[in-house]
Image 1 (cartoon, helix red, strand yellow):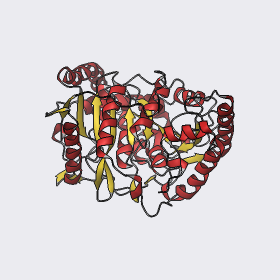
Image 2 (cartoon, helix red, strand yellow):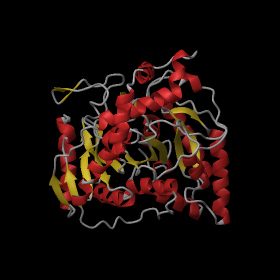
Image 3 (spheres, helix red, strand yellow):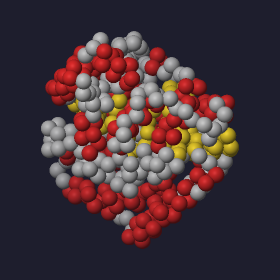
Image 4 (tube, helix red, strand yellow):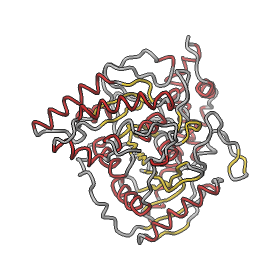
Length: 459
């Protein structure tokens, strides 16, 4: 990769805007050129929004001249196609909504717009965000910038691919069962699922409602923290704010629920945990009692899908196989099973929360495997059979059910593909968690994007 502005960290980009050495309008045009170069390979975008980006970039440029820029003025951001952007389609990855034009911004988009962000396009999602890979009937699957023959993950797969390919500085994603963290891990990014309820997307798409959070995808922790501060309305952090992290008690679980993990990935993540210890943190191997999340997550997701979208089974538009199966399963959902899931949710959250009496942070692998070939979910990991649904990525959804903040960041490479560690913190401790992640990021000192696939133009 060259050192063009689309690859700069947010702090450097904003400083160039402030001193007048770079124009937001120039960068908005660079983003559209980069999308045109990479999207025929990656299929990260449902649509580019060049006219909107030009208007926003011109407004940002004027704001810098007038001395009143917003905190993200002129920063290129992609918007996952599960969020509404006024005047533009929100397909939700479905033929049933392919022509739906949003009448208003949803809550997270409103905050980004007020902050001066430049929206470069809407990014691809699986149908109704119901898959951890980004495939739908609207077009080709979203591919991984490190190897376009492999998945970018999902459901924020388009957002992850857009950031990893250098079409934008930040991506807006959402995470109801790993949907930020899984694609971030597969694409070598930092991905944050905030504490449940910390980011309000009022007026937005509704799915995974008991579990979901909007959040950032970024190429470094500082950028993710800055975007999170905008989204959560916590007050704006200073870009590049030092971590300032004192010793933390870290509970390290190499294989939650005794799930199999790719040996190469396991070794890379274990080495990253050793870096935490070398930084002065107290790392203790533990066995985490996370069982029972599937019996809560599955029924509550199915019940909402059936209520909101069950009518589509009799509609005129074809559905993906996974969405059709989801809606048919919702129709068979037993009321007693659903009642049990609802009553067990609070108990599960309290059970996971008890770990934070003795520890400040939980560390796990982010996924069980590196990114796999498009359309070929692994049926075995480390020589053990796994389920198709969760086998490659079983470590994210438990913390959607528990509601705790969780961040993934790259730990290294396996066969040329990035693999990641997951750090989980106390409820409401998102910024402390990000500070620890930033310290680990500095200790690892990876040069990730020099390894993008040769098929991705170097620009």
